[in-house]
Image (cartoon, rainbow, N blue to C red):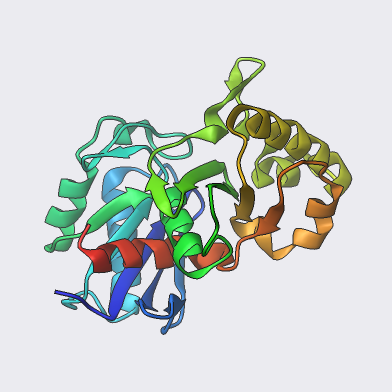
Amino acid sequence: MTTSRAIGVDIGGTGIKAGIVDLDKGELISSRVRVSTPEGAEPKDVLAAVQQVLETLEVADSDLPLGVAFPAIVKRGMTLSAANISPLWVNFEAEKFFESGLGRDITFVNDADAAGVAEVRHGAARGQQGLTILTTLGTGVGSAFLYEGVLIPNTELGHLKRKDKSIEKWMAYSAKEREELSWKQWAKRLQEFYAHVEFIFSPDLFVVGGGVSKHPDEFLPLLDLKTPIIPAVHRNAAGIIGAASLAGDGH
């Protein structure tokens, strides 16, 4: 069965967002509802927050497909990592947990992968040949690889090592805010990250998403790369749109 509308929920390290998506146009047709991610981000509290955003949208009992994007490695419905959330999510049957708690089937996917799907279907990477690497710069650093429009799931570029720590701790947008870095100071960190990724994977396009993508003129011109690097079209709505799109597919 095909559908022209679906619900997307995007769970992040700091906020949980949801909306109803027109799947043909790849855009929100409702308000974007947001609540803060519960402190500690334990499963029961995150589930309650997801229930809250669905009730606010008045879709808690809807039969529209529902996609949920989550900040972890997601494999066969299990979450295998927990960088900016409770360690209780590691090796956790998350998809079954959400389906049981919400009383319905869902499509469950990594948050950056969802954003990548939104951008390749309806955004900055649409029609792009070769390899597109999308990165989301926010609380952490997410990534999505899209080759000729096909998602290669569960890449985790934010966990490349720098001085024995995940590089996202040093160069995520949250690091800029936490350390009160100027755009120029922060861009030096981005340069190190993107130049390294460029050397390893030889992409055809970088797309930058996450909250910082609404300020592209502040930092993208400061980067010196061989690969074109452009802002995401859907910005902070990309996870919602991608999760809804995959739910509409029946994935």
